[in-house]
Structure formats: C-alpha cells, structure tokens
Length: 416
Ligand code: LLP
Image (cartoon, rainbow, N blue to C red; front, side, top):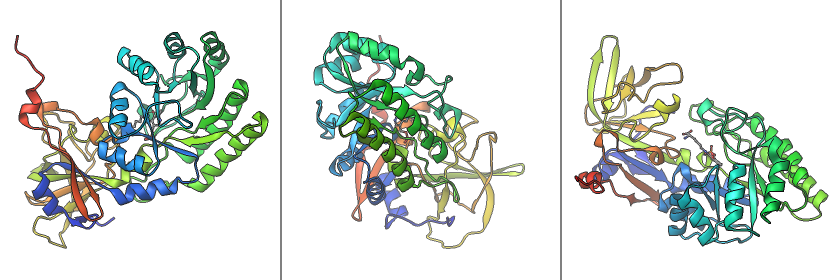
C-alpha cells in the first residue's frame, strides 16, 4: 500500500476534511456492496451491526437484503429505525443475539415479537416465562474458539459466550418445559479468526443439530471472517467456506427431510475495509530516538490499538498535495492524557514505530480498515465530542452523523 494518499472513493481528502472537520470517519458504500455480493451464496446474510451501526449503513444493508442481528435494546431500536421489521418471519429480519437479557431488552423482544437467539440457559427460562409457545434458536459454545486476540475469542471454557455444548440436552428439556421449540442453532467462535478454526465449527454444528433433531430449520455459521489489515494477511476463501457449510446443511436437510437454511453473520467482513478515520496532524516532535506525530483523534475515536494491540494501516495525506515525501520511522499518537493513546502499538509492543512520510502540522494521517469496531467503540473520554461520520456513495459525500457539540457533552447532566 503506498504511504501517500490524496483521495478516498474519488474525493479529495483535504476537501472532505475542510467540509466535515477532523477527525471524522468516512465509509465507501461501493466497498460494502462488493462485500455483500461476495456472500451471495448464503441463504441469509445477517449483519452484526455492532461493527458499524449508523442508520445509513443499516439502511444500505437492508436495501441489499442483508438482515440484521441486535445485541441490545439499543440495537433493536436502531434496526427498527432503519426500516427492518420485527416479527417471526421466515427468516426473521431482526434477531436478538446475546448471553443475557437486561430488563429493557426482555421487554422489547416480548412486546415487539423479536425472535431470540439464547446464549445461556437462563435466557431460555426468562424468555419462556414471558413468551411460552414461541420458537427460539440457541447459541452453542462448541468447546473451542479462536480470535485475533484472546479478548475476541468467543469459544472454549474461558469464554462467557453461548450455551456450553455439553449442556445442550438440558437446554432442550428446559425449552420443552416452557413449550419453546428450537428452530435453529448458531455458533460464533471468535472475531478475526483463521479459516482453519472457522471451518472446524461446521462439524460441531452438525453434531449439535443431530442432538436437537428435526425441529431445526436454520443453522448459523456466525461471523468472525478475517479482514486483511496488513498486506499479506490471510483473506477469506468464501467459496471453500460456503462449500463446507453447504455440505453440513445438506446432510442435515436429508436427515430431517426438510430444507435447512444457512445463515452467516459477519460484521467486520462487511464494513472494515470500507472505512477510514481521517485525522489532522497537530504536532510533530522528537523524543530522544523517537519521532512523534500527534493527531487530533485518539483512542476515544478508535480503541482497537490500545484494546487489542491491533494493527491498522496508515497513510499520509499532505495538505499541500505533495506526491513525494521522504520516509521516517514514526510513532503516531492522539491528544488524550494517557500514555497509551498511541495508534502505532501492536500486541506486545507498546510503541512500535512505523515508516511514514515526513509530515507537517496540517497534514492528515489517514487510518485504514477502520470501518468495523471503529466509531461504535468510541467514547467521550477527556470530554471529546464523538466525531462525524460520512458516507461516500456514487461520488457524493453524505454527512451521516453530525459531530457532537460541546453542549451535547453536558446535556444529560444535572447539578443537584
Ligand atoms: N456474531 C456474534 C454473536 C458476535 O458476537 C460477533 C462479534 C459477530 C457475529 C461479528 O463478528 P465479526 O464478523 O465482526 O468478527 N471489538 C472487536 C470485535 C468484537 C466482536 C464481538 N462480536 C474488534 O474490534 O476486533
């Protein structure tokens, strides 16, 4: 990847920055559409909206027949606001997938008739008491998992997620006690995992589905498809992945004597590569042997580097339009009063200098692969307003979320 960048989706970054103010997230709709197309062989593509839940992104997904999952009352609210319908349709447009219900989420799924995917035995009982007779799906922890970090591994006994595979039979009984039928199974073993681990899940699914029996009409392979954050990172062989799951689905359909639909539930795959975080360089300084660029975005805007040591590609957009700049090793940090507010850190290496073009104050550092778990994990730490989000579609830049104002920061607070 070249280290200088001047445009995103055909529009000049300097003009976008002047129009929207830095920092801001910008997404390219064409990249999202391309990723959706790649998954066309699956019966249902269900977007894990926690990756990037702006209403405009959900609207784009919906218009391309991508369904959605929701992990909270707030995500249900978003899905409805973006035009998804509640209800037990086949397939349901919205599914609540979580390991617990808080009171608000339980009230919402019952009142609005949102189907639920239960990730704990307690969810089965709590839902059954309120909505006996409905059909549910179960999220099974198959006893193994994998992820780009231990913090994104969602399988195995160190993970809090899902129903432990050895408790499936108890859960079948528990569901029956509440007159709930088990219509589907779901497994999601981790985020940013490798294809080898992802592929092992289909065998565990087959075994679990055989245990439940012919009430099963859908299986979900979960999300977790990896994204190439660095040149040379593993990419996804969708055709091979689909083929493996399709075999599982076909064997189950044959066994049960009816169609079994195959779902996939990616977040990162659909949006990560569509997004950039554009930041302005506000200080360039040298500390002993290290060159620092300090930019106006911090881990309040993009938490992945401090949280997981995640690598994000970075490029420089010179404000003067220069097409050549000498390179140097630099550490890129943000404005927060925290030493860990560093974008160039990697697991095990708190400050990992990176080769970037020489920068001046007023240039832009453009952080790539930021469309998933970027904005949605941002915060108001250090009383920084949440930044704007922009969607470029058909050559036009649309403001899809305004930057918060300083008044927004204190709007909900009261002095007694
Ligand atoms: N399904 C379930 C039940 C999930 O919990 C998740 C992600 C997904 C699907 C989508 O996974 P994906 O395809 O995006 O990998 N904040 C972390 C990722 C946490 C993912 C949480 N669950 C990160 O920035 O890498």
